[in-house]
Image (tube, rainbow, N blue to C red):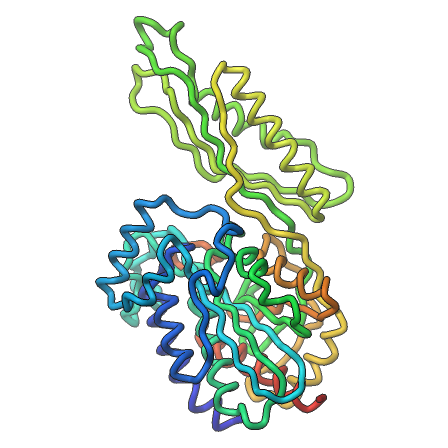
Length: 431
C-alpha cells in the first residue's frame, strides 16, 4: 500500500495540473473526457462514452448548438480522436469505466465530477496555478470548485484497482460525470442504469469546509434539493421618446420578477433559498427593451420544500410578465434532489482508515450547504437496497469555492485516494 501511494503521488500532481490547465464547461468536456478515457484504457478498464455512458434525453441545460460545434472543433484541434469525438458530439461528454474481477463480491461505484466554471482565473503571483505555470489556458473558464482534483482522485483509485486487481473481488464502476455545476449531468448517468445494481456508492468533495489536510468526513448533512430555471421575457421594442405607449418593457418585467422572487415566504418546515444569478436586457437608453432574460435557482431542505419554492418562483415570474403585458417562457435547466447519507457506513470508514498513512482524522459527519446532483445517484442506490455516502476531504481554503483565486492544497489528493483505497481494501477483507 505504501509503495503504491509513493508511486502515485507524483502522477496525481501531474494529472491535477494538466486538468486545471485545460478547463471545460458542462457537456463540453470533450478534451477532458478523452484524456481521462485514454488513461483508463491504458490501465485496462472497459470505458463507455457517448450514448453508452449516459441517457441523452435526461440531460438538462445543454449548451447551444453553435457553442457545442465550436468546442468540438477545438477538441479536434487539441488532438481528440475522431472516433471518440463522433460518439461525444452534441454534448455527450463524461464516461463510465468498469472493472469486473470475475469473482463474487460487492459492486462498488464511485463518482467524480469533471466540469469547470465560467470564471476568469486570477493571474496574481500569489495564486499557485499562476506561480507554478498551470493557469487556465481557456479564457473565462476555470476549475474553481476542485473538480480537477476530483477526477485526479478518480484516476488514482482506478490505478489502485488495476494494480491490485488480483486481490480484489466483485465489480467496480467509476463514473466521471459531466455538468455537475447547475445540477445537469448526474441524472443522465443515473437513468442509464449504472447504479441499479450497486451495493455501495461513494462520492465526495475537496474542501467545502476549511479543514486540515488529513481530516476527512465519512458523511455529510445539509445539501439542499434545488431547481434551476431560465426565464425569457418577450415584449415590444419602441422609441422611448416618440412612442413609449407602443412599447412593452421586457426589462421591467424581468426586474419586477427578480426583486419579488426574494419576497417568497420562507417555509416553516425547513431551509429555503432563492437566487437570481444573471439578468440580461436592453440595447440602448432610448429603446424600450423588447427582450429580457433571467437565470434563477431555488432550493429547499426537502423535495417538498424545493417544489414549493419552484412553484412560487414560477408564479411570480409569470405574474411579473402579465403585469407588464409581455410574454414569458420558463425553461428548466437543472435539478438536484435531497440526499441523506447512509450512517451505517460511518463506523466502517472509520475502521478502514485506522491504518492510513495520510488520513489523520475521520469525522463522522460534516455539515454543509449548497446542492449536489450526486443526489440522484445516491438515491437510486439506496432505493435498490444499497448504501451510499458523500464525503469531504479537508484542505485549507484561502478563498471560497467559485472564486477567481480558488485553490486547494495538493496534499489532499493523496488523502482522498488513500481514503477510497482503504474503503476498497476494507470491503475486500469483509467478503
